[in-house]
Image 1 (cartoon, rainbow, N blue to C red):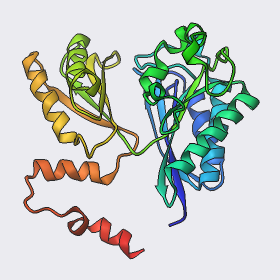
Image 2 (cartoon, helix red, strand yellow; image 1 turned 180 degrees about the horizontal axis):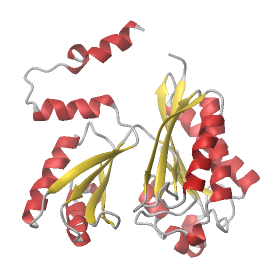
Image 3 (cartoon, one colour; image 1 turned 90 degrees about the vertical axis):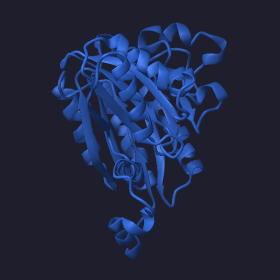
Image 4 (cartoon, rainbow, N blue to C red; image 1 turned 90 degrees about the horizontal axis):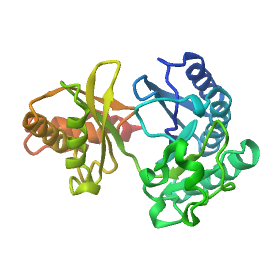
Length: 303
């Protein structure tokens, strides 16, 4: 397989609320040679969409820039409303090394992209995760804190000058976080209650920053279109905290608050290993060997 990079840009729009903007982003992603659009997901309550791209490093870098350009043209952050925290039209652009590409190469991509987005589009950016220039900027939540509305004031603080651009946001496209990182699993669990405080309490109990599971980031939201609360998570290292572990913790906590899980969902793609962990856990497989007992691994090795 040729050298490849995965890119999972998140945009502050949704098909449910603005089909024109969503379609423009999908069409832009599909036009870049050497880059494939693997998945496109949209959520009206969060008013957010996530595209998953893969291709050569050069093609994916170009696709990310073209998508940032399109987002700035079709999304006006001064009119944006949604459950999910956000600070820009293209809110975050992560790059993940996939095949024969190093994290360092992805870091170089993020730096070139940030410079180009400022010079050609006037969109400033923070570098986060493995691209971060300061320890406190590794955390995406820290970069995003203040959101679009509070960002002009935040950028005036001595420690929060953008990595690329001046101390001002783009008037309608805001600011973007760009970073290289290893694969994560965006995983949401939906509860049979409309009480968002229950979801927030559960999120606080399980997230690593509050003393919960290491490598778990979690927030509680209300899905207004469905009238239910959601625990929304980024599992930043599923080797450290497997999905079944956090799922069972949420189930127990939900029962404590008098409710239960009605379903869960993946946002974008997930590594097969993370899902195989679920099968191994719930099927109680004994002496299971992922590499030798999953047929697809053998097919990959034969290529």
